[in-house]
Each structure stands twice: as structure tokens, then as C-alpha cells.
Length: 131
Image (cartoon, rainbow, N blue to C red; front, side, top):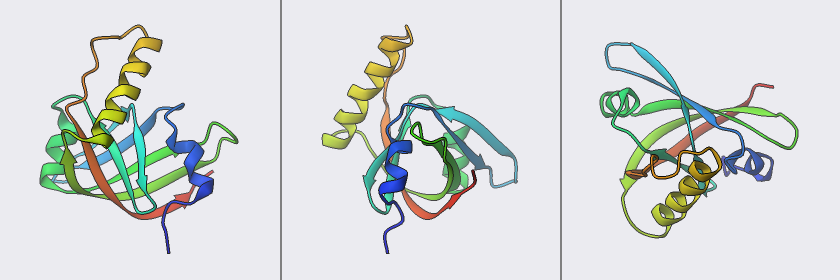
């Protein structure tokens, strides 16, 4: 049975930034806003890897995370429990995400500042509607 269904797709369009929460091996949590949670297929999403930061360090220690996404259509909020699978640094998915990131940067006056370093692919373990 697929994890991601039609009801989740509006929240994966990137209109409303998402929040990702990770935890280090020592148990220290970190939550940050992320530009893109990209639909890959019914069981996978890609997160934009833009900076070398605590989120990346935590994922290297502990591959599990939670992403909160919001639907711009109806305000529905979902928590996705995800597990890191791999990073893509080239190819069609990377190119699409890079183009979208540049569009986001242009609209926010940050053109040339955001740089996509990779498309981090995660398996969706579960989805729970919270609002």
C-alpha cells in the first residue's frame, strides 16, 4: 500500500516551507525549516540539501527524521516519519529540484545565495495527519 496519496500531494508542492526534525546519536534534537520536500514516488520524498549543517550531521549519525508538511489547499498538516536512503547530486530529480530552489530564491530576493548541494532521498515509513 502506498504511503503518499493524492491527499498529500498539495503539501509537497513547496508553497509552504516544511519543518524537519532530526536527532543526534546522543539524543540531541534539531528542528529546522526546509525549502523543499519533493515527491519522488509513492514511498519516497527528497529533501533539499543546501547547507552543511546540524541536520546533515544528525542524519549521518541517525538516519531517521520527521518532516511536517502543510497543504496550502486546506491547511491539513501531516507528519512524515522518514529514513535516509541516499543523496543524488545529478540527474533529472536533482535538476528539477535545483530549478525550483532557484525560483524560490528569486521570489524571496535570495537569488544566487541558495545552492542545491544534493537531493537527499528518504523512504517514507509512515504518514500521520495531525491537523
